[in-house]
Amino acid sequence: MCTDERIHSLDDTMHLHVGYYEHGCDYEGVFFKSLETGRWLLFFDQKSYGITLLKSYEEYDHLGLFVVEYSIEDDQIEEKGHQLFECFLKENGIVD
Image (cartoon, rainbow, N blue to C red; front, side, top):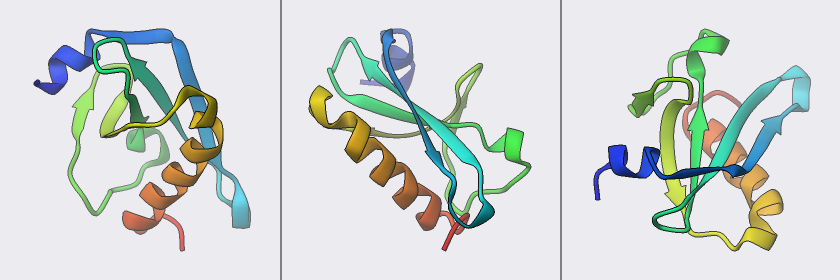
């Protein structure tokens, strides 16, 4: 399935804002649940932070970069979402 199809089937009532606020940092991302796959998709707007990422990602209007799709149970998204967002930041050299 192409990413564009997933973007058009996001459940905007099922989303989670995640953040990293340690060591004076203030980075935020957002997970949206796909209506089509039931998976959680992470988006990050690097332009608002003026940073360049180590990896390349597809960019979407009003959402930022589509980072990755995760299979996470709804009752675990808050805890795991924050952990996965921190891993994404570390993988891209944004935080240590």
